[in-house]
Length: 266
Ligand SMILES: NC(=O)c1ccc[n+]([C@@H]2O[C@H](COP(=O)([O-])OP(=O)(O)OC[C@H]3O[C@@H](n4cnc5c(N)ncnc54)[C@H](O)[C@@H]3O)[C@@H](O)[C@H]2O)c1
Image 1 (cartoon, protein in one colour):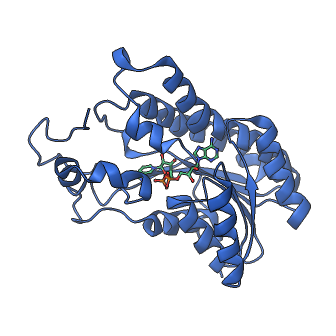
Image 2: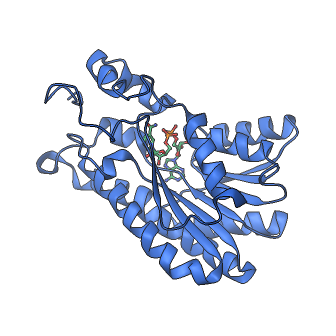
């Protein structure tokens, strides 16, 4: 029980990686608040965790709105009296898959939503949670970037920019809050099979590119959740300000694919 009695707030917890983290954190003894735009899936996820013997609640949250961020933190503290872990995982992944583009053809509105959710959402959720953690003199914040924050991928310029900002903000927050006993780290997953990625993976070339990890498989949500657990719990207590890449070796080696083969469909 690595998170016994800790209180964890996970954004984007209704599906994918956030859902896997909510399940794992609850199994490890945490009381988990799932925050997501998707009320139906979020409530179902919280109910399933509770039915399996865990402690979980759902709160409808748009991370790009400060009033929602404050309400989510208040639900955690009103229900369980504290907040130990904030896992900033939400991002507009469908927007990234479907409407993100290279700069010259990228809609300003798409850019704005991406930055507001994937980057500003981290700021707003953290701004709401930090006073609680500072009063406790203890806390962990996990942010979510991607390997696209480190190496370029064609045609997803708003996502790449937002996630690059998350990596930089992580370092800055780690520096600011270490003296308050608060650790701040970032996870940068490679290609992880989640529902939002399924359509994209239907394209055989995209799938081949994604499978060019050096462990010859795509990531699973549970892979990322295990790293989040390590960082959130006491075993990660000497880690702060880090961006941990978890990508099956994808970024560690020069690609063996011919140039241009890693592409995104129009
Ligand atoms: N799947 C991958 O291959 C991959 C790779 C690298 C990074 N990531 C990152 O991991 C995180 C989780 O991705 P996933 O693949 O599990 O995606 P997903 O689409 O399965 O889950 C994202 C969740 O975020 C929620 N969400 C979207 N906008 C929101 C908002 N404004 N407020 C609150 N919730 C909101 C969605 O409703 C959804 O439940 C994201 O930050 C994503 O960028 C994913």
